[in-house]
Image 1: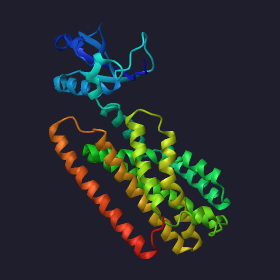
Image 2 (image 1 turned 90 degrees about the vertical axis):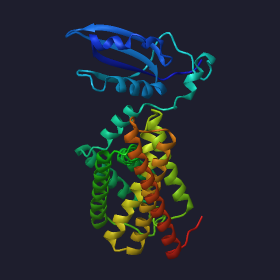
Image 3 (image 1 turned 30 degrees about the vertical axis):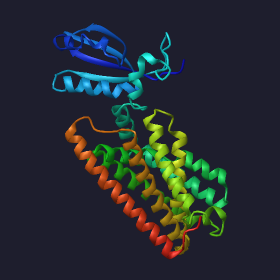
Image 4 (image 1 turned 60 degrees about the vertical axis):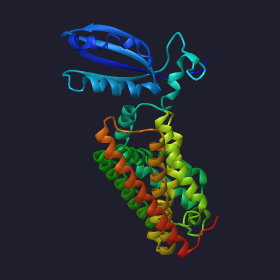
Length: 337
């Protein structure tokens, strides 16, 4: 007996159209279903499904009722239910569920990431605070303070939403994510420049020097951060600790870049910028590939064709940029393990 993640899908339909769902209880993906008559000759149908079956169920419902007026689907996470359900992996009677993707639905992913990609005052304020904390940590050569900055940094959302936008071929979400990412980096640069001008900094400290060179470990860390961020979202796991991984790859080296520019250490600034570029490329490359591996696709075939094209172009661009940057690093300073 294992834990089974569940979703409750609520469907609002007119009485006439609700008859099309009479046989929904017989669907192998349905754990339970209930009907409630509501005002205005409408019915509320509640369907309990396993989380991995929610996307398939929603796609089927949208195909049936996408053109119906006053039809709405609502997906709700279920904290607990009694009696408990057996784990489908251990239950031979539910072998069909093993073929479902082990992730939450596309709609849940989109709702969460589209919100986290929004450019808000809270996002800007968090970026300012995180950069200031990182700058102080770098100046004091204090790892604990730098880790604190990574916890605050809101960099996970817009990076993961950009990867999702690529996998879905959603240009509007991609533009929104790029705008938020660019604004966050610009704010971090301005704050680090100001901090470098006003506060003393030892360019020879270990915390600074370790972020002005690129090696194989940095590339592996950035690739792992991108994949881990996607896995955290697609499995519904808490993303806060994964956000720290992405912040490891992006915020401290970018803060070093601004601090070195402010102090006139242009060679070190260039090294930090190369590290930032490598990290951005690796996080997005790994993120897009992980979304694809998790089976994230648009609902309709024409959207899927557009998404496939966007994904191929994006992966090719990120890979070429990474290759070019690696060659530049090897030529300029060598690549140590």
